[in-house]
Image (spheres, rainbow, N blue to C red):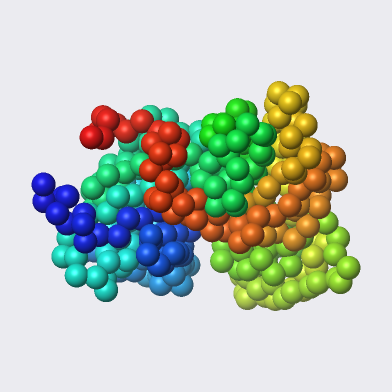
Length: 349
């Protein structure tokens, strides 16, 4: 009864709970939060010091008693308590300017394809503990397709490749369902690790995670570009132990990322091989759509198109597709009930 009363004054939310970033969509204001999924915890007092961007700024710079935690791994919860507190912080931030004392929003939340019932229950319980009065869980590729404005309810084949932070999810959709799919643990964070390993192997340079990510964003490419790009990469020399700066080119970063990109392409081809021929014909006509932050890697669409011999395009604003899809479902009650996964709380009246 109280939940329903407070719910009247709460804003319904769509949440993309990603390994790298958490995005929140409010029905009234659109995307209101886009923050890294990182939390800084003081281990002496067990107190949360910072969430999101503020916590990311502390990465690699903290004294021993401050722990920087990434509570999500491959899109699933690895630290329940910290995830709950992070979600509560974001829900409170959205309702900061409203009159609600105790926010009780309805929440649509994206879940990875390859999750167990226990993992899904953990996501649902964390959202409920953080203040949600009702939680709808929907698989990420369906939300990504909705956010990219693809007609998922039609009887035509649509292929979505969602390259996130922790996982890449490849799915063929038709009639508001997933026909064939593959989920692989190779995505943005794995690419950062590739760059760190390459710097260590080739230059004897120990590179920080944030620096590796910046190098990938600025000069990372999947195919050679017209203009050559280079960047000064800073880290610690593994031989002398002193700071060192070396110039690195886009060709060298391409070499570092080659194995991860090849894995994604091989899995796209493998998914197409097991897709019914009628749907493959639709996909060939309509093309594959890339979503997620990894889709921003320059030339990834060109390389997949060349290797899989199929048209590929990057969705508009691919980073926010999943959360925009979750937001769109808040306005479509019938479709939400149709594609939401069963709740561990039992059917909702």
